[in-house]
Image (tube, rainbow over the protein chains, first blue to last red):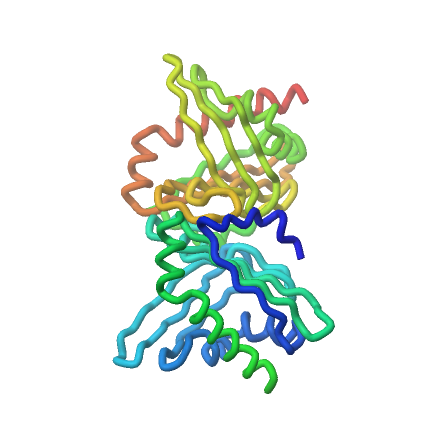
Length: 159
Length: 159
């Protein structure tokens, strides 16, 4: 996995790394097919709906998250890079069509690699600055992304 | 040229379109080789130096512009999409490695297509909002990018 070229910066980036007991094909499907994303993307009791994933550079990545009290959160971002079964990069720092936003929070790198036990899985959240990184860590990045990844694996096993 | 998928928005985007009397190979070289960029990128008497162009998604695009009174302007942006001889997309709205910035101004699309007279050339400046587009128009987008393009053609003819 080409981590060196990512220039991971521990002061501004967060990373979750795991070996998942499902194939890269299934992990990729969970990340790229809206009907799958809607089933695993948010830790319960939050839910995800209205997912749009245009799987090309500049494409729209949209999701609507809804909390237990019905509070809605519409996320509109942009797909940056797509290498099937290997690498998906998207950001909330651009509108679709690569239009710059001034309210971006993060870029996410999803990196997959075949592993004897299934898939080596790395998810990186790259923030504007250390403040954003630290807020995300305090919001529970590791627990939140960890629980969502458990949900992804549970779903992937059924595909 | 795949303009439809660009979703050009006249309220927030600006476009320069021309047929250039030089081949796409030469236009591409002028846009992607730092030693060439430094010769045409800014309308005189402004000059450009210290160009870095990492020609891959997430790569660094850096230039330093210097005005007639020596005022320096360092631009650090990110390459978004590279289709050799056809399409170069970059932005000042991300740091290299796709790190989001909250001070972005534009994304630039450089689109080339072979033409009987040389190259059909389209340059699009996609702004955060209509205010950015209107400021860029008032700053002299069409004259500025037009003069720079004249400089590009003059250089390309000598390659």
